[in-house]
Length: 278
Image (cartoon, rainbow, N blue to C red; front, top):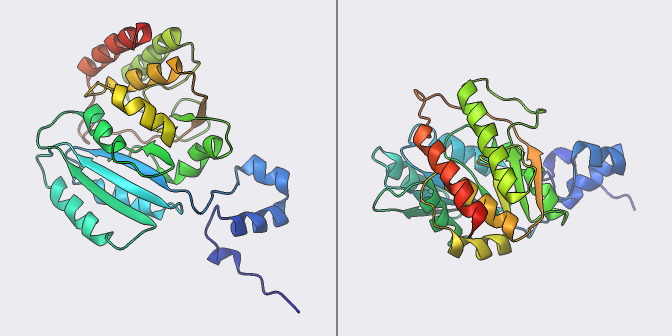
């Protein structure tokens, strides 16, 4: 009896069937070199997306997240936007009402509190096995989720940072002083945490669910101080941390970039504060 093999173009990428075809054609060693592996079909990824005045990019971003062939839930937290972001969110929620592969869950803040506060709200609602942070702009590319998840799925890491500065992915050339500030803050953070990160301020941070359940009640920073705070608390608890490269298409201030020099000084304070004590 002849077995009819399913065409590879009909297989869901990262599924066991898809990987078997790749391994049969390329070999196990080539698959490892290319970053091919199996993402369990029963795993659900929680994508936590803080949103503030992102009506221009939000739908495009959500569509890109939906296209990633991983079972997931999208948790979007509107931090009291002043534009039409809420209308876009309600439309997205209605469109995804019967899509279990891409669940869409929306939460609203009645008062603007900041990115850190929105993330705390999102973290408290997650139901997935792995949690990733995704900004609502288009600076970071969701197609890179499989690379970011790999160290956790293979049980090598509890937390993964997606670095813009490891050097082997495309990176939009923008502000030198921002770059220098990021490197300075990362280096100072490393001095307190004894981690050797290259990009502490990155958006892309990925966590096992148990890590999020442990850390969320301990988080207090409402704005961009969240980044050094959670990094210090991850380091203090000695979770296994990996770093992998990601691409970056940064925005200019004219295009909607929100972080400023005041946030840099706040991050500096947070590095020292949480580096010394929880």
